[in-house]
Image (cartoon, rainbow, N blue to C red; front, side):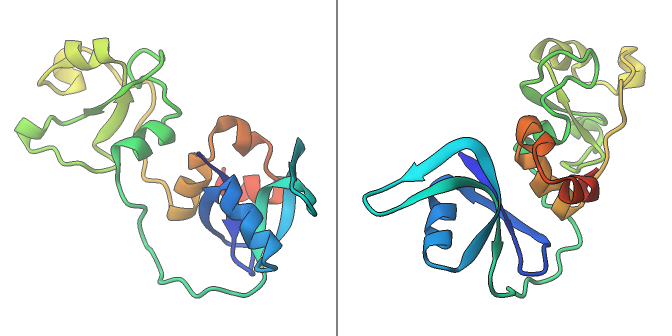
Amino acid sequence: MRDTLVLNASFEPLSTVTLNRAVVLVLQDKAVVEQAHPELRMRGAAVDIPAPRVIRLCQYVRVPFRRRAPWSRRGVLVRDRHRCAYCGRRATTVDHVVPRSQGGQDTWLNTVASCAQDNHRKANRTPEEAGMPLLRQPFEPTPADAMLLALGQDDFDALPEWLAQSAA
């Protein structure tokens, strides 16, 4: 489970890593803990540190400019917070607003999270043809926003205020 956010030395979000990897980076003095889990601690024979939620690298890492977040089915579900775009229930599938058979592509603006029942009911039609209006319009997240959304709702709310505002 990826639940630790990694920031560049300039405080830009870079990626998410597992808790164990985050601890290793901190113990190797390659990163510092910016925010820790309130109750969790990582203990070893000679180590007792708070479990990191957000870490910052000590040295700046140059990252090629990424203009767009890569599309993925998981990314669409995370972007829509696992809520169906048609009824608001828990979503388990991804639906194409314009069906692929009608030329619809796998893009952020053409896919929404959907529950299996609504995905089946809409079938091979557009929302207008099926009489199923979208509760919210799909959008394309920035690469940084996609990464922060991947942390999940609970973790996102617990981020430092200065970091959560940049993703909102």
